[in-house]
Image (tube, rainbow, N blue to C red; front, side):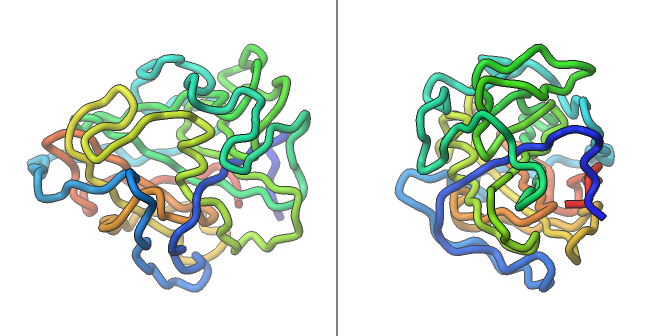
Length: 252
């Protein structure tokens, strides 16, 4: 049965290209080619971080996973992101979608081997003050948003799609946030980009611990339930085998 943790959970969106194969089919197909100017990996320019790992990541409502307040603004979207207007086909609505298509993915940003916490209240307009690190109220909600800095992004749509469906590209998530990204930068962080992704072995599995390189565009990844996407910035980086496991606190 789906767990709602006693609160509404929220959503997320992105741009299309070639999708990863559905997570409940165990086909880890590599992402397709993205749009011009999309975030591309620079694997040939990096140096593998020697003898280094990150600790396994557990998530819970209100968690802060990584160094906080590294973005400006520290809460909510950048000026180029969502502030009530429609963004790349994604609207802002007065309520969240609770009982229909509602999945979650983990976006891990690592800068010079340090995990960076995502801002809370991404995809929310005029968010209320958080309670125990969790933001539940806002003037309106995009179908892509964060409630806390656990690095879990919520994707919600008023639809009867199965949880195995993957309908949101990462591009739309980044557009709602409004974060600028190139092959040599991600928001305020400058350096070569290395990217990895991981899928659960079956629908409903809450722990993901195996990752593969993204060899095309990050923007091209179509998000699945409990997918983990890593963006590493800097000349030194973690190999796929060095990246930590991620445990989700909700079923879907």
